[in-house]
Length: 352
Image (cartoon, rainbow, N blue to C red; front, side):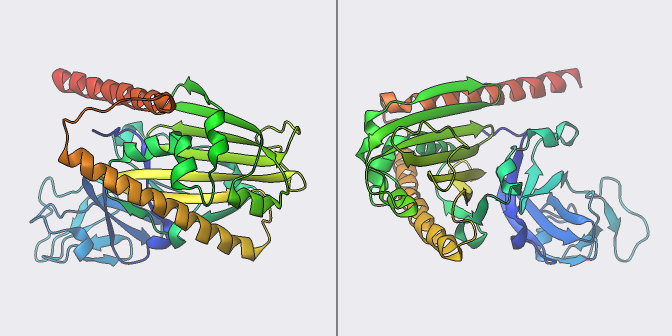
């Protein structure tokens, strides 16, 4: 099941032009298109004979069905039926609230009356010129054939960096320092401090370190899955906090992970990375693209194979180990929010 009353990233804005663009989100087909008033998101199904509206065309601020020519406006209402002046009762499709922020297109998948822009993540650094953002995969999501919560598990279990990403952003030092996990209203925060250890290969190159370093790794998740990996690497004993790692002292970066469920076993994995060093150096734009494409594709292989086994052996037992504690907190919180949402929906149905 999915948490419906939430914002999910549906596309990078560069993906959406004047032609219909279709994507499955939470098992729901959604068509998006650009109008003079902004991007519109509608149910991708004509209410007449069910042809996907994405097979039609955009007419300024309307979308026209490619089967019989019915036209729908941004609210989802049918405003034209060729050959007749009367619009049939109920001639409408679902319209989704849309917000555009940081080059990302967000859709609210639940009750439109509950849509609340304050529930979007507060990623202030994406508006800060001292930080440089690079969209992953040249502005397209990475397809993952796995449940979205497996991605959350992956991101909160930092110990996998020592094995899956040993040649890039991980090393054995992570294993010696247990994390601290905190839970708040709609999220979970995990902090790991690593002291006086060799830097991982990527950070050694970025910071030109010649000896051991201190390092913080902070992972936060706001429901339904706005996951940020915040990492800082700096000289031993500087005792710097997140946000204090200036370029003369080390390197600091954030990776924004946005797994949007497609189905129960497939996910549109949007991601981007921001750095607080060498922001004006185009060489490092390419380094980031190359390095993090490798990192995310390494995870993609793990996640796809993991889901295959889970689907093929659904009743096989699993164990938990110490490093699973943050993942368990995230899953518990998600279960609680979904349960509360479902209980409210059942109550409304009983009162109707």
